[in-house]
Image (cartoon, rainbow, N blue to C red):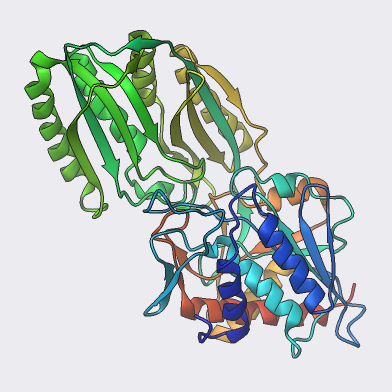
Length: 484
């Protein structure tokens, strides 16, 4: 990968892939950034939450230019086809595959490692003409935007911010959705698993998954929903005991895998197998054209030691089946933009007799965000769960008169002869939170083409990285010739 162009960007990105950086565990990447600053004689500082800013004075003669902030996040989504992969200690293995860079069975971390790499390359490019630069690297963007939400008041001084965390070439983003998490907790009692029951394990694996904002409109498999769908169909006909359930991992990833262990009376064993075959045929018709890799299996399982009490098991399955997932409404203002969505993200059994369901809602309309979050709350409250909402994060309203938007658009058109699309994005960006603390900021977001983010199929388009780097450098040079 170090032989790819732009050389400086890919050399640094290669180094970043070797640094473990799960969300909320950014200590190693923070140390990498601080050491990078020290090695290149750049000023660096951190705040109480762990964000990092690296600064560089202006090129001589451009001291009066506005201070420009380059911004990306340190953490990455950790998803792997190998459940034993240790993201806290193992480097990412990268593969150059034609015009794409991907990882070997894991997320690549180009979201947002490539934005971090481009910022560092800009700070160390000896030929780049620039005004004062501040490179801001935030922590925990993927699981709560904790860094942006707690950014120290004295960390940045500039009025213009380039968020380098978008995923489509020739597109400039000037707005994003806000979001909130909704969590439901079921408390259950352990009961002896009946000895006259036959036990099965249903396993859903290798679905495409993807970003719960950027990919939610594609109609991909949600493994938790498919799991609940089958269990509900069995429960309608027979007494079911639920012994184990697990699905999904991260609130902002469409769940790719889920499984459950359940039992029915031995006299109904063959009927359950027949139900499964019918279910499998239905899913094949519905999803195979868009989901070429998924696998669903039903196997006999040893009798577990215990089961979830029957009432809680039934209420959980009913709630998972009833809970909304996917696109709720489309924008009335921007054609093709998802306005509101919800993701049934994960279902986890805990040791303290709790089953925790995590969901995530997004909307570019604040009232609609809370409307769908409250609908999710109502479903799980009716099922007897204890429901709470996270703090959430605000959306970023588009400013179509933004000066930096025009500079970024002109830069791309001058270089590549194409006028880029100016858009809003359904995914969450940190820009909305920055505005709550620094309302004077003028911002845009852009980046190279990434596909399959938040899943092991994540890949990055090499030619788009070169165009992204060219656009970034041209914007920096244009701002350098502006006056405060």
